[in-house]
Each structure stands twice: as C-alpha cells, then as structure tokens.
Amino acid sequence: MPEQIEPQPQSQRQLQLQPQQVRVPYPPDRYDRDAGRLRDEPEVSVQESYRRNIIRVALPGEAMIDVVPATVDGETVPSVDPGTVFGPRSPVWIMSGCNAFGRLCTPRDHASTSKVLFEDLKLKGWVCPAVLMAPGREWVETGVVVLGPSRDEILSTARYHGQEAVLLWDERGVSTMATGLADDVVDAPALLGCPVRFGADAVCVRQGGPFVSRSIEVATFWERHRALLVSALGCSVCEGGVVNGDDRPIALVSSFVPSRGGGWQTGPPLSLASLDGTGDDD
Image (cartoon, rainbow, N blue to C red; front, side):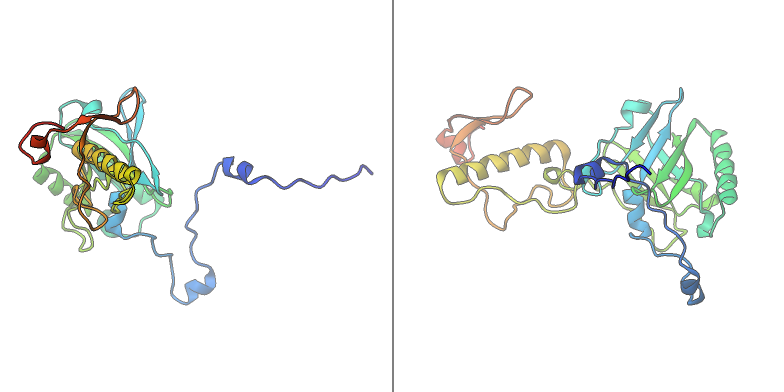
C-alpha cells in the first residue's frame, strides 16, 4: 500500500482567504421546541434591522447596485447617492413585499405578496425590483424601488400591503418611515455616524495632547482634519462638538489642507486679528 501522507494544517492566512459561508439561523432542536422555543431571537431589534439592512437594486439593463450602511460589521463599505442613479426624480422609496402584517410566512407566501406589490406599484409609476437583506444574510426579502410618490401616498400603499415601514433613500442615506402597523418600529432619520470613525455610532477620540510641542501640533491638525470631515460629511454623533472633555487646541500658524497630492502642510503664522477672531486668516 502507498504510504499515507498526513494533511498539513492550513495557515491562519489561508483560512482567512477562504470564502465564509452564510450562517444559517437553524430552528431549535426538538428538545428546545418541546420546551416552547420555536425560533432563535434576532441579534438586533426590528427597528435596528431597518438601519442595518443592505438593499440590492436591479436597474434596467441588468445592472445592479448595493445600497449599504456606512459600516457593516465594523468595516467601511461604499454607498451610492440615488441622484447618480435615477437623476433628480426624487423621492426614492424602497419597500419590502414580504412578511405582510407581521405574519409567519412560507416561501410561497413571500413570492405571492411580492408579486402583488410589484404589479400594484408598476401601475402607479416606474418601479424596479429590489432585495433587502441582513448584513450576514440571515434573512432576505424581495421588494421594490419606487420613484415619485409623496410620503403620504407611499405610506398608505405600504399599510395596504401590510408593511410596517418603508425606506426613504436620499443624499443623506436611508431613513426609516414607520407606517403605524407595528409598535416597535418608529421613524428614524438616516444616521450618518461619526465621519472620523467611518460612520460608526461612537464618539471619536482626539489624537495628540496638551504637552510637548509635537503632541500639541498633532492635536491641532487632528482637530482641523475632523472639522473638514464634519463640514463635508456631517456627524450625527456629536455634530462636531468638543471631544476628550476639554477645550480645543489653538493654532498659531495657518495650514494647507491635504489633497490628492499629499497631506497637511504647515503655513505661515496667523495674524493677531485671526487669533482673536476678527480676521479672515485660516
């Protein structure tokens, strides 16, 4: 017989490169079912699921885009402004066709209610298919993207089809609009998160400090960089307020902002008028 060769253990890097499969939310075993536990509880609330869900939109011509939260499982993921896709035809609404009136549903139920929703909204304006899913794909819903209806019109339609919420997609992100069919779902504006933390809902921490010249310089430029990001992207965590529980450092020199050509650069000293707030020096 040929000599058997023991398989070599895979390196951690090789394991990380392997595609990870979706974690299936299996039903409890028969012993747990006998004890009354029929299904596992979700990892997040229903309200939070609307903020975290990923939306896949099927555009005419077989193109597809994913609309995602600022972060998924701590990793930054790019999103899309609807104006770049649909032009100025706002508002853009996303509605699920599944789990009507909060009932337990079979795959056939999902297919049936989604088909009815799509056909109904197709008669009222341009509509294209969409898929809503959890970041880990523990659940998936088929739905639609609708252009044009007012808030009252789309909420009325959603209630008719048994949906507890619809999603508004605009330049701020994706907001939840409750229909009133579920007590645990309320209106929630798009959460921009902290731009310094790539959209996470946590307060950023200033780098540098009040001691040693280089530490003070780092703190000053950190604050300037943060101000750039907050001005351009907004912040729903502290709205650009003071962090670290103390005052901001005061810059004595002007600066040149970072660009595609390089990082921050120190400029000439600021004028006295600028330091007391009466001048225009940066």
